[in-house]
Image (cartoon, rainbow, N blue to C red):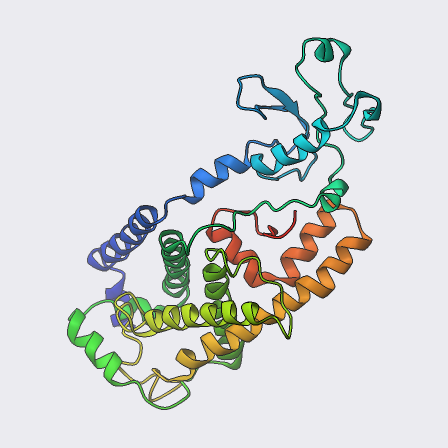
Amino acid sequence: MKRMDRCLCAPHVTRIIVIAIAALVICLCTSTNSMAQTFLQHSRLNLFGNPVSYDPDGDGQEVPIYGGIVNLQLPSSAKLIFANYQSQSPSDVSTNGNNGSKGRDNSDSKNGEGLIQPIPDHSLDFELDLQPTDTQGGFDWNNAIGQSMIFLAICHGFRFATEQGTRAELRGPFFKDYHTSVKNLRGWGDGDEFLVNYIGHPMGGSVAGFIQIQNDPKGIKQEVGLNNRDYWKSRMRAMAWAAAYSTQFELGPVSEATLGNVGRIPTEKSNHPMGWVDLIVTPTLGTAWLVGEDLLDRYLIRYIESKIKNRTLVIIVRTFLNPSRSFANMHRGNWWWKRDNRF
């Protein structure tokens, strides 16, 4: 009890704050497209149905875009949808009942400004064969590392918030305690519960894998399939990334071994709290979890989307049936229900 009381003194609180600030600065420096900047792009479309201005042609002539309660597409997606309606003839334009907006005004036609048609009901999103994600170029190392570090900061933040022993072990000689923790790695189990080792860690490995995939132009467009070799190659790359992330989280310079010195001393749960289970289970079962979410997305979620046109229900289904993908989406500043192969 006295040791835990000492850990709450000012020097240790300062150490936690310094670590948190350093992690934040590193994330911002290594990510070329910060979450805050990306969120500003999302917020261009109003959440409450009010029209906002948008310049579809880049010529300074802004037109209104009407959004529904969950109209959260990227401006680039809105531009593609808008272009689809520009190709319609004036006779094809009718009043939009959902948004109360009207088609092209005769004066607009005479002035050569083109068709101004607000975005209609979101059910049309599923009928547009558009590819909103850029699949050109090589692997985006900057964003992949930046997003992984954001994930790392969240995981360690959760540890500090929920584990008194982790906070207590912040004191002491850094390198000596780090060396002792790593040296004590042995055996399979680490004393954690089944839910932690075989559910939580695989989900974390799946999130790390999705971070790799969403920054890999070759992997992001692959569809799950038994005979799709490119798909399985991309998921093996994701597993390698998850393995690297897991090793860093357990044993690296910003890890459980350095921040909390897990494994340095025995605990009530285990004489050897630094075991191999997390290092192996996280990337392997994590990749299996990832593939499972790919299967659900292709064969169940898409089926549900084809049967319902309510955007809110679709968002709920996508989010809760693909939790790891949803969490990974948030690390790149996207809404958690985003899909790279459809709206």
